[in-house]
Length: 71
Image 1 (tube, rainbow, N blue to C red):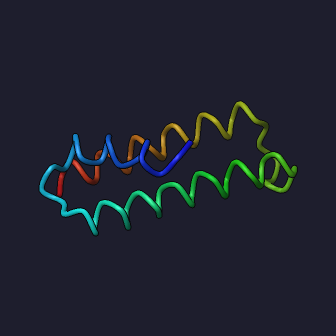
Image 2 (cartoon, one colour):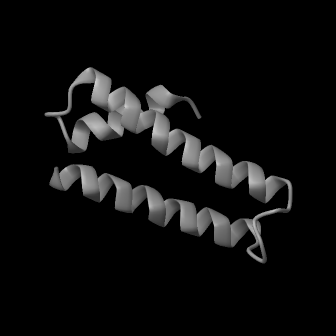
């Protein structure tokens, strides 16, 4: 995944955000997801298995997009 893959959905749900804000928000979302995946692969995410982490990350992404849609 690349940050540009995060920007496109953000633009779609919140077209009023300027480029600087989009880049900052996309970088934040990317970092959170990347960190969770990295910790899971290293076995340091706690008791959650890969399937549970995938489900939580999907829910997280939906919540983020809903938040930007409301903005």
